[in-house]
Image 1: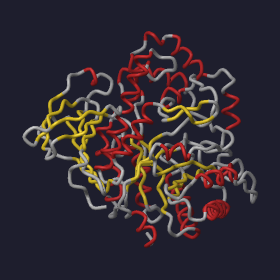
Image 2 (image 1 turned 180 degrees about the vertical axis):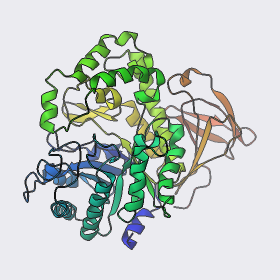
Image 3 (image 1 turned 90 degrees about the vertical axis):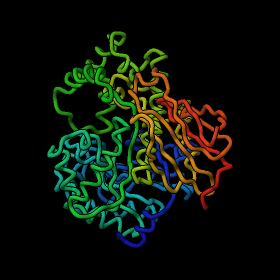
Image 4 (image 1 turned 135 degrees about the horizontal axis):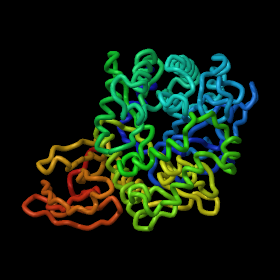
Length: 492
């Protein structure tokens, strides 16, 4: 790493961020989204751009999406661009969307990267080479060796055009963390960590699944590097939940749907092909239609992910999402991560949502914001929780997981905040769907101030008095933020 890159990575503050989505301006006009993300307290903005989107023909560049992104940046936020090698003419698989694949000609790819980074003129702090390359076939149509070759080209050109920028390794996702040692996905990332060690600055992880597994996921990511004698900073490129695969009763049904919908391996998908498929009958749409026909008989833990589910299940899923957003973020920060990005900010484009797609069932309810009259004006409950978490962590320089004398499921995290009093967060890790129905546990915690402001993850606040230097709190699955500004403040 250069001295300039090191200074970026060593910045003391913690930043919470969001991912715009899997595309920006690819499915329509590149609209405004950075001010909306900033209003939630996001200090990091991640967006996707595609080779064919920026260079539709060799040597002819379209800068509308790139410039639209740059025009929204104030300089206070950090920008992260995932640059995807998908091109109708420049890549092995001719497509403008998915899967990303190796360049037909590395010098042509190098010139594309060079032009994009130069266009951004130092305003993008992080550049990522593709996304989740171990998800072969769906997101990367190539080998680990080919990814490293492309990553090496990418790194060289980014550093030549902007030496202060940091290069991010394509995200290490749930396919890696959920698989056994020696699995193809782990072998893939093992090769990247070995052969690509000199071609990236930051190791990106994607944190899905049980929030309690976050420390293990971070350990696995770092072990990839330790196995080859080095260690670089880990960042969270994506995190979100809940998703159906977290619930066994939901997955028992989902496996049948997936088997029917994808009896054949997924083919490459361009934006035009996706638009055409939305109007055609397909195995996927038939499988989803059959699922919706028996919606009322499905497990509630699956129904809550479906469009038009009962209101009480919709509300429960929102509450789970709020709790998990806090838990995942804090456990990642307590594990030494300093940059996180929530997946995702909003749907890819305004307009009706096609709920007869499997991906809608899997991730369709994760966005923080929705569209109203063509603008990002609809704010979901998790957006309020994200904003609350960003406010509570403002100025945080260190987040620490504390030992507790309570049940093993009790989590206690503290944050030292510059110019502010300390923050304590407590929650009891429980079954994601049913845990809120269990009675709270009583927790006592040392507290030198006379009172504390206790705010739950849904924004409900109250004042609690301490007794004999301790707080006595009823702690449930919902995280509690506990603070008092009369306590000694950390140096600014």
